[in-house]
Length: 237
Image (cartoon, rainbow, N blue to C red; front, side):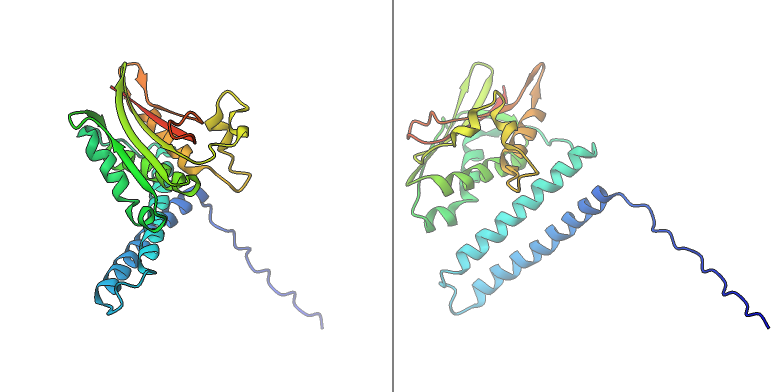
């Protein structure tokens, strides 16, 4: 008696999915979870009888830094999917600079780095406040890693642009940064493990700021008045 052949089971086909969409949703979920962790850390610091523990400061700073990176990734994702627009308004430039510095106060104190802010108190600009302070905060964070003791954070109006400048007294950018005409783009290489996300984000956001036929931009060089690296962000006036 012949045995019956087993019935073939239908082959399950994996549903189609868009990896970038999944990544965007995952970043959003991670950012929400990190926000909860930040709140818990702050509460623990308040409730603990050892609230002066020096480890709380770096822990809060690193979680804030991670949150900032995730925010930038989420913004870049939305830009790539045409789901992002700037929230432009008029602001005092001094407030812009002070907010970016406030985000770095913990690390500045821990590393005994002196930062000087130079800005005309009556200077104003039109920009997305939160996005620009995030971009500047990331550059300030990077400057602290390579400076020796000092950082100069300044702003001035020149021609039809507002120039926000971050200078340090470190060794400056490596010469390899200047071997191509577009030195910023040449350093944004996602295949090398060092993405240069801060510069990439700053450049992308700067270019989105426009006024008539003028667009924002960034520039890097080793012409700091302190002897090290100099980063400049240009916003159209």
